[in-house]
Length: 365
Image 1 (tube, rainbow, N blue to C red):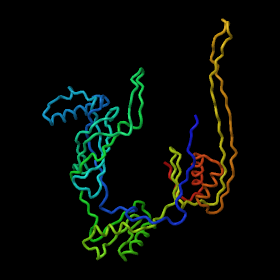
Image 2 (tube, rainbow, N blue to C red):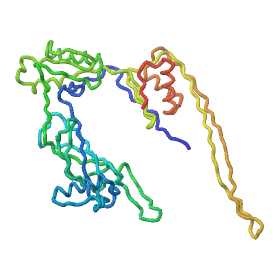
Image 3 (tube, helix red, strand yellow):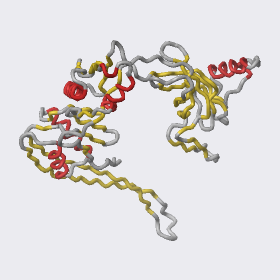
Image 4 (cartoon, one colour):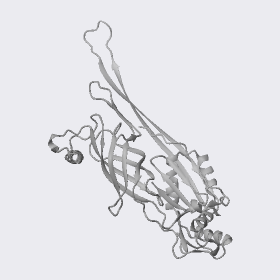
């Protein structure tokens, strides 16, 4: 079996100092984070693709009917059109009652598909066990499950038909309190903690509002509200978010072996090193032929004949010498000149790390 890998793609940051980014894109204000919600519900109208009479689903259906004054025993219910599901959602900071949020719906039992189903009203709970939103509505899935209807029960499936979503399917019922200014100051939390980035961020703020910002650590910058913004917290945060900063980028190479993707930052450097790489390919092909007797020959019979061909192809490796402190651009150009594949490129990067020549963090997913 031959596996195909995409062409090597090395994404490089700018060699020079990157253009400034807004503070609002680099940080999160302490006290203004999102919160996760979770819930349990029933999706109905699944046309036979629901749970196969699971006990929990049957009890849930009986409880729903009991709310409407129908006393039904779970043993008298067939649940093939119903699926028990788990609901997840993120509620953003500062959302008020009446706002809508998206909901993800995932099958909890053995339902075949949620296609065409409708979620019955279900509460979404926070970590404190209190309901902050209520979800309901038709479920949209990004795939399908279909059958041919012929002998053998052949089916066709695309993506995951047991996971769907409801856009704006939940209504916020309870606001989560959020305080972003305390003791006349606020804290900015960097999405990518780094001491250099935190220092640059504080310096950029102090250039506009002198002596207002202080970098506490790699992830936190504390900012005092200037006297001119007393009582105008929102206006100050708005002005603060538009200040531009050039964050520092760590030397890092990320390898995803499943997709054959390599991403490296422009700050990656490599010590003086020599690289030689060759490849050996062994191909084994099996064919089945047929030995057919001649016409009017009653003594012979048709006989399958197996044949196997084996070929070995060894590619001579090139030898690449890199001078002192080469950049990632030069390494990419040199390895591409050797004609190595993406999978071979991954092996070379790992070997460079083990040899101590790669001056960067290597992350393999």
